[in-house]
Length: 89
Image (cartoon, rainbow, N blue to C red):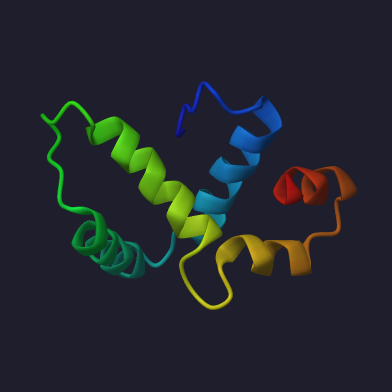
């Protein structure tokens, strides 16, 4: 999904899972995206940095946005030890 080639496969999979799990409702994600764009500057699909900025938004969304952020909510709920370890990475 995010195709972050510099991340270990387990971490990339954990990030994708968090995006899928907490990426609803769509209007909440759109509001978060607008907030992120306000803080970092807006980019457009034709911009060279669009893909990198999109990945950075997804990371911010699952690791920092919200109270508590999705990664902390997932850790509190996770029963699979391997997935919990990947989330902690």
